[in-house]
Each structure stands twice: as C-alpha cells, then as structure tokens.
Length: 151
Image (tube, rainbow, N blue to C red; front, top):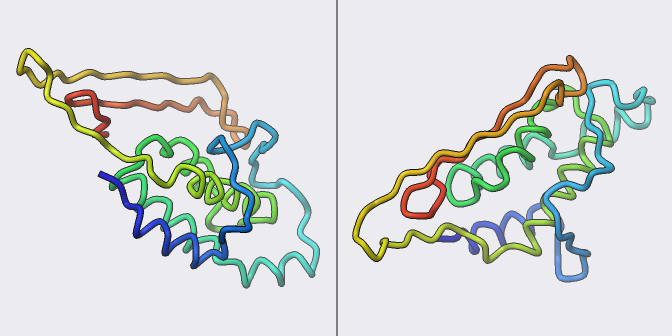
C-alpha cells in the first residue's frame, strides 16, 4: 500500500518538482529543533505568516497515519512547533518533504507467514532528555503484524 498519487499532489502543492534536490534521510543530524531557535526579526515574522507550515505538517501527519509510520518520529519533532514556527523549523519540514520525493514508492507490505500464523511484534526505544526545549525523555514504538508496521 502506497500513497503515491496523494504524495505527488502534496509535492506539487509545496513546490517540490523534478528540479528540486531530494535527500536520503528523513531529517539530517544538523537540525537541532528548539522553540527558541532564533530571534525573530520583523522580516522573518512577516515571511513566516505566509509559510504553509501547519498545512505541510498536517499533510505529513496524514501520510504517517495511512502508509508511512516510519516518519512518525520526524513528524512528531516538527509538529511541536506548529504554534510558533521559525525559519529553522520550516527548513526541517521542507527537508522531510524532499525526503518523501526520494522515497515516494515506499509503503506498507503485508505478507502471510509461510506457517500461516499472523505474528505480532512490538519494538520500543527511548532516549533520555532528547527533547531539547524541556529536556524530557522521548519514546518511540512500532507494532508490526505480519511483518508490516501497524502502529
């Protein structure tokens, strides 16, 4: 299951075309997202009022719910700043969208086990104080059924 048609429309909506350079990772390590990343100048505040940040993050959320749970952690990071995004946050969202361009064919594949059983597996991971603003721990999980992520 993929959302190739939907993702192509979303790429066009956010001006990602064939000439746009794609990237190979959902979010690069140089993005250190924090609420107070930079002081907002008057020009930056004006520019950010015209940026479709909330719309882009909403589209990404729809994508992770339907066919791309692999992007959950990355989208979770950028969704924390929907109330007051700055340029650094918008750059991170554009990076994620450029990654989707390079991985547009990725989706979910459900397989039947050769023994005929539907195996349910859980994976959990966390980091200590990984959230940079309040130094809270973050956690992620994946539940799979028949070797495909379902949550």
